[in-house]
Amino acid sequence: MCQVASDALRDATKALLDADLAQAELVIASDVRLDEMRSNAEKVALELLALEAPVATDLRTVVSAIWIVADLQRMGALAIHVAKAARRRHPAHVIPAEIRPIIERMGRVGVHLADQAGVVLRERDADLARRLEAEDDLMDDLQRELFATLLAPGWRHGVAPAVDIALLARFYERFADHAVSVARRVVFLVTGENVGGDTTPALVPPDR
Image (cartoon, rainbow, N blue to C red; front, side):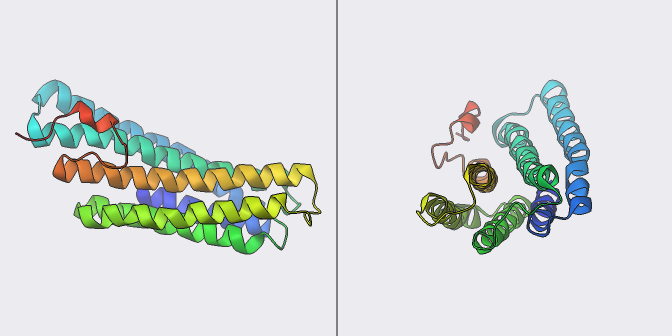
């Protein structure tokens, strides 16, 4: 699911910047795959809860998985929102030339965070998970830079494009937040420690 979400954001960003309708449609179609993957993961988790009655670390693993697949599905949905923006304005370009470098960087940061979240999940690397918080700060900085450009006196593209771009910035920022949430949940899974104000995994107590 990390890989699907990463690919979706990369391709959605390309569709957005190039006004590529075919690419946008491919990203939008990935929604079905993500929904199926989440459904299958949740089915297995619920069967384990019902049939195996896991405790301690095993219970923490199952519950964490339920929350993680929800985050990953939401990341894919946010990438699809980006692709839908490209489709909605086609054949026009949504992104003016002066905004393009910021959107390109937001796309790269989002893809990197999704890829790193995949590494964190596969390797259960709590140290890398904690480092994702700092990398997410770059996405926040880019969002602020983008808003400053939209609000500058020299903005000449009108209100409607500004609204579109502000929404896109929010999609990228939330994508990054969900990647960080995945990393936080892995920290909880490995250590039992809640980090970053994430309280939902505390449904399962740490090992005694």
